[in-house]
Length: 258
Image 1 (cartoon, rainbow, N blue to C red):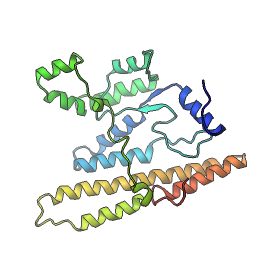
Image 2 (image 1 turned 120 degrees about the horizontal axis):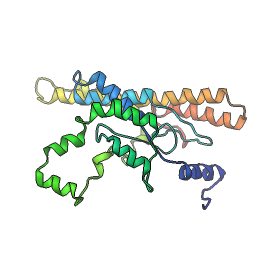
Image 3 (image 1 turned 90 degrees about the horizontal axis):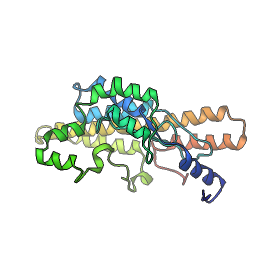
Image 4 (image 1 turned 180 degrees about the vertical axis):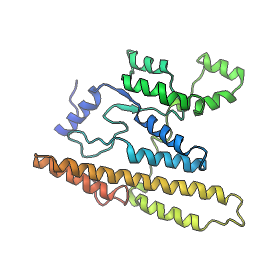
């Protein structure tokens, strides 16, 4: 394999990303299910989704890989891909196909298969967005879909994974939360018939701000703990720098390029 990268660190990280075996991570599915089991039917939908995000940010596995200066993984380890049962609840057969196919595979261990069978499927198979959408479609549409005439990219994936703008460079999530709270105060419950719905949405956004700040704080503490046990002085310094950075962002706007 061609060794590309501007320095040895980048080459090692790139090689790790390209050579590690992809796996299906069931952790996010478990956390989403726990949150929905606890809150479904007791709060408005935006609040439900925000509490779910909060539960994920407070409990997902943290990971700082060898040589990394920028931290955060979508799964427990590199190339661990989470599933989204609220969008599409995979069947037991789906997991076998992902595990066994020759190309674009995701290895699925026995513990993940067991959790999917015993916890994820029973809760989500009749609640997923995919199930609800397909139940609303006409017989003609379903016939075309099942024949493979068309498909839908969003069917099994979470939206927003390419969304970004300049806000991340000019403000932190505590700034955003303060703006949200001002909007809540400005709601007119006497004249605006949508004020209550707006309040629910804004409160959910504030919860999400808190959740992602918590995630950053968890990484700061995790990097500090790793630094405490590190004997290599260069690595220790890098971990302490990560901790300092994570204490700034995402709560506040970035102070440095790092």
